Every structure is written in C-alpha cells, then in structure tokens.
Image (cartoon, rainbow, N blue to C red; front, side, top):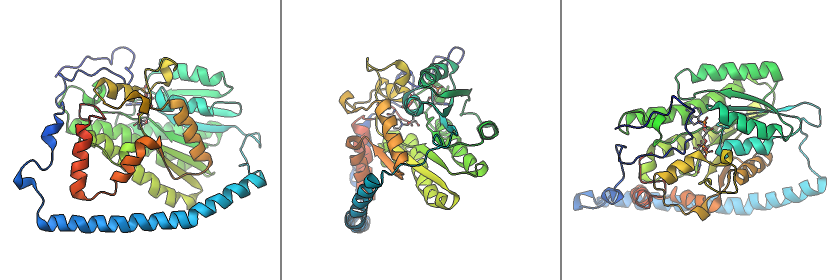
Length: 377
Ligand SMILES: NC(=O)c1ccc[n+]([C@@H]2O[C@H](COP(=O)([O-])OP(=O)(O)OC[C@H]3O[C@@H](n4cnc5c(N)ncnc54)[C@H](OP(=O)(O)O)[C@@H]3O)[C@@H](O)[C@H]2O)c1
C-alpha cells in the first residue's frame, strides 16, 4: 500500500482524498449480513434471552420517560419562568474585570475553529492548539479581530509524550493567566488519513494511532485542569453521535467516542464535589464545501468521509458555526450530554436500546448504508 507522504510540506487537513484502491479494507457490506447461513442463526436460548433484554429495555425506557416527563419537565418549566423573571444572569468574570481563559484543542478547522469564533470577544484569552501553524494563524487572526487575546500552540497529539506536553502547556497557562475557565477537547482523527494509516493495513496500528489522538490526548486535557486548577472550571468533551451507535465499519472511531461519552458522563457526576462541570457534546455530520463558508470553518473530517464515499446527503449536514453556538448554549445551561443535530442523532440514540441480536443487524445495516463512507475507520 502506498499513500502519498504529505508530512514534508504543510500538514494536510483531515479532508485528505483517500485512494480506496490503496487502502487495505474497502467495505463490501453485503458480505457482512450477520445471518446469511443456518449456522449463524441464534439458538432458542439466545433468542429468548434477547427477548428478556428487550423487555427490560422497554421497562427502563418507559420509567425514564415517565420520570423525566412527570418530574423534570415541570421543574424545567418552573425554572425557566423563574429565571426569566429574576433576570437570571450568571456572574461572568468580565463583570469582575478578570479575563476568561478558554483552551481549545483541534482549533485549526471545523468545530474547533467555530468554537474559537463563538467565544472570541473582549475580555477573553483563547489558547488555540493544533498542528498546522498556518491554519492556527488563520483562526487566530479572525478571533483577534473580534477582540480576543490570542495564543497559539502547535502540538502533535499522536506522539507518546503528549501527556507531558499537555502538562507543560496547562501549567504555563495557569502561571501566566491564573485560571482556565473552559477546556474544549475537540481534536480528533479518522482512520482513512495518511498519518493514521501510515504504510500498513487497517488494524492494530490504526487503532493505536486513533486511540492516541481521540482518547489518550483528550484524557490528558480532561484530567490535567482538574489537578492543577482550584477554581471552578468546565470541561467540554467533543465525542460524536457515533458514541451512541456506530456502523460496523466505524468500529474504532465509534469505540473511541463511546469511551469519551462514558468517561465524560461519569466525570460529570464525580466533578460536582470538585466544582468542575463536565459536558459531552455528540455532534452529527458537520458541513464542508459550502461556498458560503470560509475554508477554515469547514470540517476536514467530514470532507474525508465524503471523499471516502459517505452516502449522507448534504442537506442533513450542519455548519461548524451553528454547532459552536449550540455548544455554548449547552455549557451555559449546564447540559450533561448534547446530541446535535437531533435529526441525525435520534435514530442512533434509539439504536442504543436494541438487544444484541438486533445490534448485529443494526451495525450491518449502518455499514450497508455507507453513511460513514465505504472504508473502515
Ligand atoms: N465532522 C463531523 O461530522 C463530526 C461528527 C461528530 C464528531 N466530530 C468530532 O468533532 C471533532 C472535530 O471535528 P471536525 O469536524 O472539526 O474535524 P476537522 O476539521 O478535521 O478538525 C480536526 C482537528 O483535530 C486536529 N487534529 C487531528 N489530528 C491531530 C493530531 N494528531 N495532533 C494534533 N491535532 C490533531 C486538527 O488539527 P490540524 O488541522 O492542525 O491537523 C484539527 O484542528 C473531532 O473530535 C471529531 O471526532 C466531528
């Protein structure tokens, strides 16, 4: 397998054009149908157990619906009325004259660049982290024009010493600014990129490199602020709608994002005693190639999936700007988990409750739809 070596020049955006013929696994999804022979059919015991699992899923889902609709919906209604009448405004540090400090990994394009623009303004320090200095400068310039004070840091998150580099950076931010208000862990990678695949077949090496960027690097940003920051802060973890349910060919990516979702929701519970708020964002597909969008606001990752044959129609995509606005709203209203856009996420949320037999069917159907591309990730 040969893939062009882009590492000598500027770092390629995620929206690299893969060469399916070069890649080791191009999906023929019809071959993945789970019950294509008599021997693959479930036994009576296994089928019965699955009926039991589904029954309990229904009990869990109905209880959750009744409790949420009967208790939290009325409480939410009362709270929104009370907040409106009280003119409830969170006391921001701008009111106290202190600058707010936001750290964003994966800030060079797509959602990260959108978040940088959303939070840019007077009284704000934005610390942008990415690999490509040119793209960092582009994002930084646009945010600076809105009044933000900018810092950019180039960091390759795929390397084994990422943890120590993140410690060093976070310590220096604390020393210089005395605070970090929100850490956004946004950097992420797919499999079918030259730096993820490198020169080997899809498999263990691919999984290790994706896990290093999507999980290990994110974990470094998630845990470090808690260790060194005494004041109240927030961590916003960008997972994915694939964290709920992933097609079979999106297995490594989906697994890394499920890790982040579970970790984030558990840390949210634990963080309450440490004055740290954790929020997990689960985006669906984000737009690229829209002529109205400047290039830095386009998602490289979606571009890569589209180039690799994703069948999702363009009208279903959302822009990084609107995504960033939704992220800000989620943080300001303290949402624990934010799947968005809902039209893409709801089927995947529903798929979480299927039993293991139907799970196999669902993962095959997802792969067969080629929604996440024709390749493995
Ligand atoms: N796009 C979607 O449809 C979608 C859907 C669900 C979830 N997400 C998640 O949202 C996040 C952002 O996605 P996006 O659409 O904005 O993608 P994007 O435009 O491709 O941005 C990815 C960001 O991650 C950085 N990055 C990638 N590999 C890196 C590495 N090895 N070291 C350091 N930085 C690295 C990139 O930096 P450089 O440009 O400098 O390489 C870039 O800033 C990802 O975590 C992704 O999994 C995206």
